[in-house]
Image (cartoon, rainbow, N blue to C red):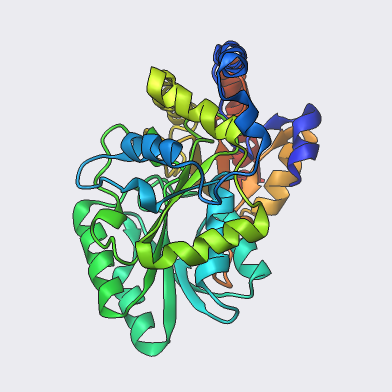
Length: 367
């Protein structure tokens, strides 16, 4: 579904662009502060492809956590996490490369793979995470170049891999000399996440994250943390695509990091996600919902006789937009399921929207 079509007059349970009531006021004040800053003229000039080192240092310190303390030199500022994935693919992979991905994976990476003519190899999904034995078998049978993973709040399944799974993935990547692309777009929403995969295999992991889900989707600032050996190729891809991320936005984000605004927004977003998840669990109680308590979405498998496309069309007739499994599916067999995004609608509108989804699901199953 096209996002602009959804945005017009439809209850959007398809895309996630969570916002908080006071964020507009905070942005107004931040822009005033930025306008009064002494270096305003610097924003009119070209900047280093990877971003200004002082801002990279601020972001590196912000992302420092248990067993992970990135060097500012290896932090590259990009135009959102999607751009981060794009420059990683552009810089480090070649057409025809085989990339292992979860059988259900982020739709934006599927689009990138198609544009850059990568071959995606599906790894079966288990309730607790990817089937790493299947990945081992794949690597023994094929020349796999990379693995794309979302270990912390997987989209769409919501899993958070435990430390043993992360270590096993890192060990497997070393054994078969795989590049690891770690997508951490939703990771900041998890209150106490395990150490990122990059901390287990820093020499071969490119870590990609951004400020869309934890702050605001319209502020297109993302981060790529790269091993030194990969940095020149990724910087060249940044130069080829955008030259640099506009410092008007990156400096605003860094100011918010330093004054505590980002931490405050992240805390509020975590609370908001948990509240919405609770509403979803109450309304969809009894249905086979798959989700994580900190996630802004739920995965809803349907009965054997149900058709997700028919159900999505029926909901669209009620002016409610949801996603089927098709955009996320890499394997040839598409499961009958819905992904329901919880973050875009006003909180007071969420319960009635989910009640409509439940009614439609039950009608579809018993028609």
